Length: 248
Ligand code: GRF
Image 1: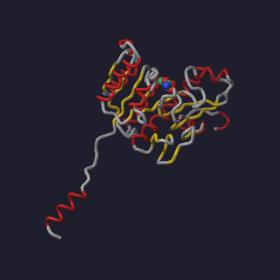
Image 2: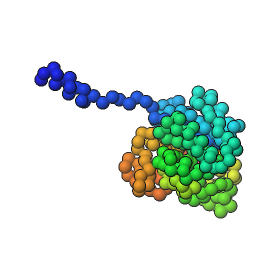
Image 3: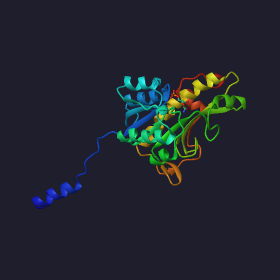
Image 4: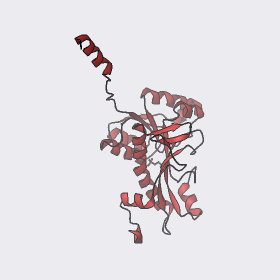
């Protein structure tokens, strides 16, 4: 082999490694406990990427402090300063795109998104919702679950589509409702489950295992069932060190 050939073969085979971490933008409106779970996962090297910005439509959202404390760019974009939903969403798109995200994570972002926004980031938008979707879409899920005497509740991560709380579910964590449960206890239990499953879903996405295709959400190329992956009550309770009474 001539020297020339050797060097040319070597150059052809050389593929530069991408060392840039995958980029995540998180949208919040309030407390940001899910944001904190994502920040914690990142600091343990378990997120599969980096949160490059947190954007809030509420100037006093506590999550902004969580972002700043973690050294993350915290941006306030008050929706009240825009004359229409479309105008606000247009501005939001611009701020998000400045950060060149691979994924946009809605973590308690209390705004209905316009079709233009959803289409712009289609397949790169995740949301977390406090119910076992498709049950209990919308607000006040804990009170509605209790009023119905339901036996089971939980949290779901789903891709965002134009149907409110209706996009393909990625992962759910279930919880069994007991006689002692109130809106407050359910809220806490659901929150703890959210903090377990959201970092998992984000990591799957950033690793390229989770996708939204024509046939819905897929995991490692296989279509997910309508309720996504499921963490049972027992598994979640064990993970969270919850007292599950006689069963434990
Ligand atoms: C969570 O319960 C989530 O399901 C809903 O908004 C709440 C946000 O809580 N979408 P936090 O701000 O992350 O604490």
